[in-house]
Image (tube, rainbow, N blue to C red; front, side):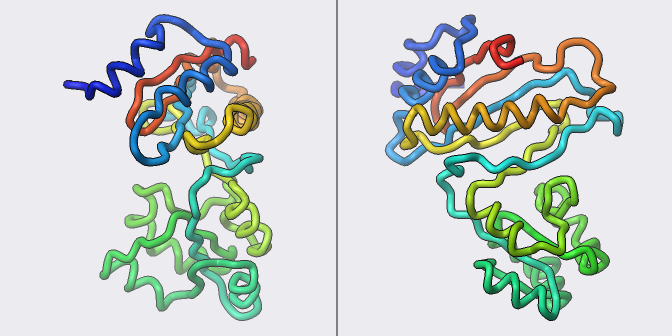
Length: 230
């Protein structure tokens, strides 16, 4: 794959075989973000889990102290008083079964997170085939199936992110923007890693954190020393 000149220049400052301290990794990844737009900085965490087993799944949510730098659009499925509560709390879209055909048939997906009250999950379940593959299905572990919709919306807008294993047992999570200060990125990364460590399934044997890298949207990745985070 041919890389741009900017990418190649940024890569020169990074030793591909080195494992960096978190502080140094954050500094390097900020320097590697040279695109004309404000790049997202992502953490990619390869685990020793085997996601094929239910007792080795990782899924949860954490509020990053400095948010992700992205405006998050929240859709809430609720009714009656909870619908009004969601509107008052700042949900971007609220509704019930009238939204099903809009999402299912019209392909409407102008939202980033879906929250639902437990009594609406029968309706939301009909969207499993659409929302599931996109990681948008509400889930109690992520705090998106709840009666406290106001708190859920507040947390999400404040920088709550969901983390989960993909099919290759890697967690991919944004930890902020390239325009963030090093301290902001470091604190977000530290908060995320504390949550990932706490979420370690007891069934996992051997090394839990296999490798960790930080990377901007368009730039090279920087490897972080997992031993420094355990």
